[in-house]
Image (cartoon, rainbow, N blue to C red; front, side, top):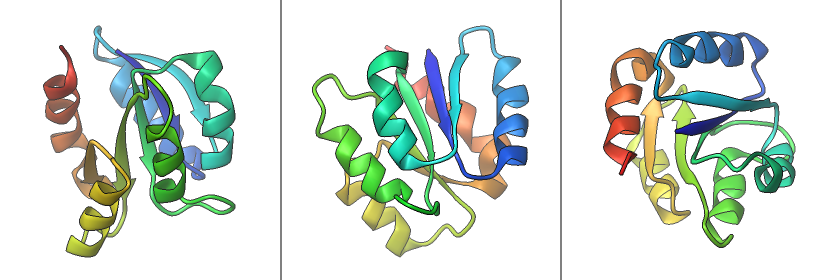
Length: 119
């Protein structure tokens, strides 16, 4: 599975890349700092999954996810957030996200979710 990471926190991008790179079935195809960059790069990178931070400047993860999901053959999108709440879960579902994971549960819940998306 080809994964694109989108987060405005460089330390988180590096940490997530190290964590996901240990899985043989997963390949990181890019690290981007904004939702706008993700919209521009998805056609060139062909990710199967976009891990999208919720809170970013310029274009937040919900806006970017909504735009991504309107594209033909859209990749899966999982929203990552520091503040997991029913409100954010409902908003993520409303824009078509395939899941929402709290960054505090990244290490325990992300891989099971990713593998549930694999065909």
